[in-house]
Image 1: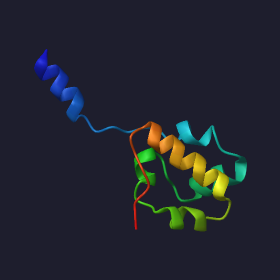
Image 2: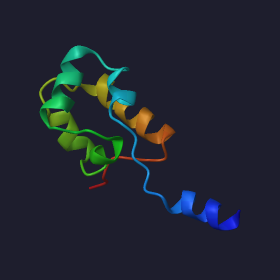
Image 3: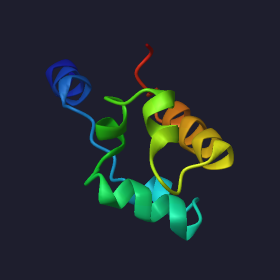
Image 4: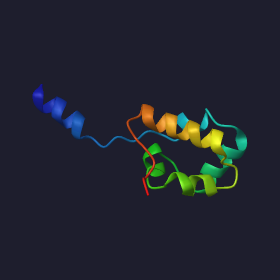
Length: 79
């Protein structure tokens, strides 16, 4: 059992971006889709400043992005 648990813990986590998109309004969804992000992990390569620069992302959408990432144990890149 312990080997099975270790294998599960070492398995890379990938959470589909749909988890986040369902919480956003259309402009923010389109902004994220236009950058071709497919997983929450993809978002972790960007800083808050970079995400805010995307057309369609405002402070409310950014707050939602940060909140959803946090629930999955992830965060945006820090500058």
